[in-house]
Length: 373
Picture (cartoon, rainbow, N blue to C red):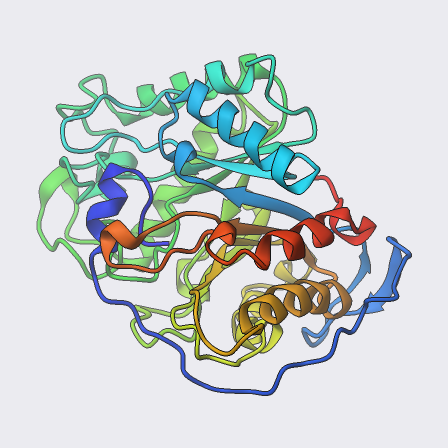
């Protein structure tokens, strides 16, 4: 989404597009399905994966700071108690640094906490806020050219390799969602923004976004091979897209997971989740010859409260099951379980609609949604 840490919150103030294409409620396609390893044809043309269980994850407000160990642990405990099972993944934001704030270190204290659930995969949102100036402008150039900045006077390559060394010390798998939603103008690393020569560049381009990603991967992977990289643009149907998915894709060799973020901004929309996601899933399929074999993670999703009775419940219940039945390349789904009303955005939390809590609990209890990365 347009932000979760302090620097990202600034970006979230922009107006986003809101879908309004009503469609009838779709049936519960897999309510009777019990097998968790079924060969099934994907709804994405030309893709054939063996279906394994989907990993259900959460993003919560406590994860906005990679230094907030107690808040994250308490939030994980609350989610486990509420839904009867620890989240399959939990998102922690780890910005490079913004607004003069210290650069974010690898969240070792959180992940080594004795109450961190063994079954929960950390998904680290590594955003470039602060990598150029205080808001992250010129970040692509700063990273490529190893610029020394007030936040990182030793240069960004030193920061990245230090971060990687800490990840290697942790010595367990983590997923890093680097420089997400790059196809939308609300992030400082968006293409077409910040024309100038700061840090040796002439503005953000498709090419220097790809090169930035390749640079970070090239620094991290040899040191910490258990860090897996997740490439995550915004919903391809948004008219604000600054380019095609393929324009930003850094290549199969430095990407482990692909995916996207997508929301329903008004409760009156009756469009089914699977129909909403199909264009983005097809765009991921067309990235490269190798992208058809990449596992997909829905990095953020949510639906605003309101609308006809039961609309939010059916969207979630039927949507997750349809993704399981029709898209075996979808490996993970991360629900954005955050109240964003203080930004003028919806309250995305599952608890905002009391009927969603038992619905999500029922989904979590199904073997189809008890996957692991």
